[in-house]
Length: 135
Image (cartoon, rainbow, N blue to C red; front, side, top):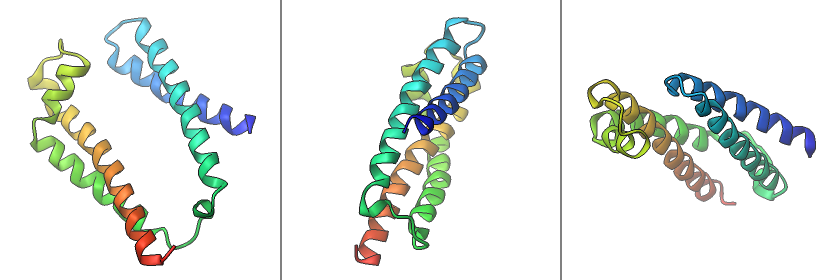
């Protein structure tokens, strides 16, 4: 249990720390904050993965095509919808109001829409798989 927890936390902290360096605009506290956030998210991900693995639904089968398809379709559709909607403006206003809208609105919209679409697509794919496979 300890080794997967360390792997999840280190990977998440590294990724989030790099995002803090990229988007921190020279602030030395940004990578530390985002790496700490990554450690928390990594621990949560490890916990959820271990809880899911210990259930009947956690047994991986070849019939998870619906979940993967839902993830991919949701990511693409969410990215397209997020780029075309005012989601980027809303995310900038919430996360960092000092960023210029004309430079970052599209990127934030696509990233936020992709994350929301991937989450919703995966949930819908899992529901469809559960109904279709009869579990």
